[in-house]
Image (cartoon, rainbow, N blue to C red; front, top):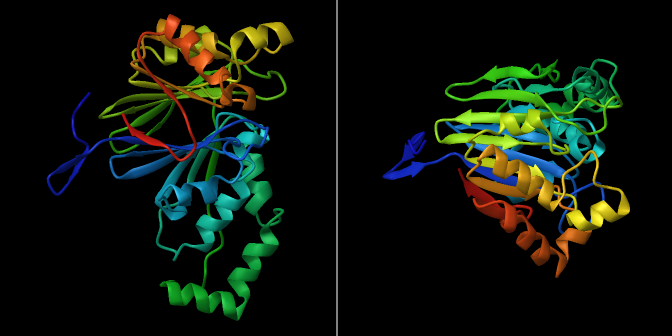
Length: 299
């Protein structure tokens, strides 16, 4: 799993994960919502598009038109609310030569996409003005585009558990996650790359389907809402992972690196954070990362 995927000069470029959003529906100065970008084989893949994901990815040194694939774990707002911004920004900054954006996710992915940028979508007024107005046309031409300016063209597909997509030398497999069914369907994803496998649990309680998906993966990014003891006491332990829940699932799956994400404001504070890390390490014996937004790491 340590093969280089491409080279730049004399340096190997390994698959890299960018943590764009490492928080929850509760906004804090340092965490809000979920979003991640994987760089592999010269391609960029986004997982979820939560609050301010477009702005935060630019802060991380990424650019919207470079992302050709987006996978949604589920459609809670803290995982998809920046989707309209990302769609419009990616289209607006294009010169008409970029790859078509491909978007996959559970039920509602197609409906939401069409509802945002379709011919009669909620933001169709925006792209129609930019397609038709002389000033917008001029900006588009000055950027390198050739008139007529095309309307947004996005491929969106609702998917279920199983093999979802095969890229150049990477592929995506989904498994059912257990979160807020039957209200919303939830998926976890495994991204197999030349450098190893990366699993995004999305929001889930510990469950066999996600554990099996993560079997022997190099990395698992797992939601971790709060200190498990607090969750057990306040009744929030069901339908989501806390510290020891994430640890047990990672240990059972045999993943080499556990990255805690979707971290709530209580667990983000001190000394709760330190206690939580200690509790995880009592159960999980691999490498542990307590994520921060805008951090990145190689697989």
